[in-house]
Image 1: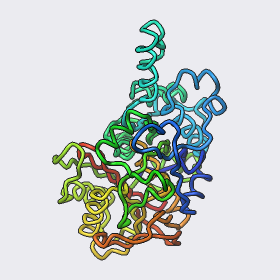
Image 2: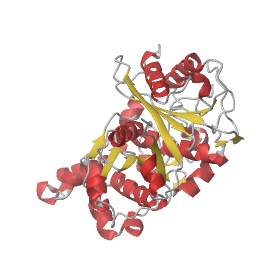
Image 3: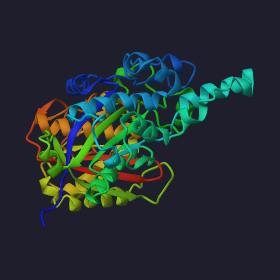
Length: 407
């Protein structure tokens, strides 16, 4: 029996690098960092972030949606519309019972919660929005997308911290392989740059303190890195069984060839220095794809710009891939760390890398950490990519690796 393969037929991207995939891809390839001073964080210990530029929910989705939906849902809907159109699908005409939605998110509508908490304290309970709960509940990410798209199939919001987007894509692939759906709208979205959340990250000393140099703050694998810069955004992929996509004449952009997930079972925030859990996920993704380490041409690394994460990931990649000619990048040098959306944003960029035959640079990498024994791209590098890995690792030691192959 012929093996079933899962195709990527549509892409949508809303990121600090721009609204829409063309704008985002161009800025990522230019290696132009997006971090800047953030007025909302002006009173905190870290005053910089990577925001989606010029995002106007009222203009893009309509005034009613902008009033009733938290930003994390708004970002996802804009990216989903782009992805569905890119796939050549019309949700008004599809069989909604065979369409699933699987999206990743970390924290739900934190901006709404913080704002409404202030309303409660200053104006009392009668002033709290009646839409508070549907605006902030994390499950409303997939729930609202299902409503928007008329998707009646499985509707799931996945939370594995910063691995959420990648985990969602892996689970979406599983639904297709199991025959439970014909189309799955998948990816992730996040909008948790708020004073409270950023204060929490700062207290953990996870964030870069380069307030005076925001553009140079996110510097994955660089010897002078000092933490990540928080970002926001959404990445959406349309997945179908390749045979179904071909039957309707769809363009197959790439394949999700394999997926690996694991747990460090080590610490609530710190990665296991041994990298055992990460290695399990990497090897599982390769095995699922029927690939050997030497087949990997490119890795879009998790590469957050934190001291421990980068050396741990680099050590595991070196151990698993050995002398493989894999060129590594971390696009977080441009976008910052989009948290629960990161794996989805980077999966979209990985598909584009394969299509374009181009590995984006790792922005701000001026001096490679001697402990990082990898070939890391510092400029846009042409390369034929038949197989790429996209890594995502989250708090709680939750790891997800996607193997993405050329169509």
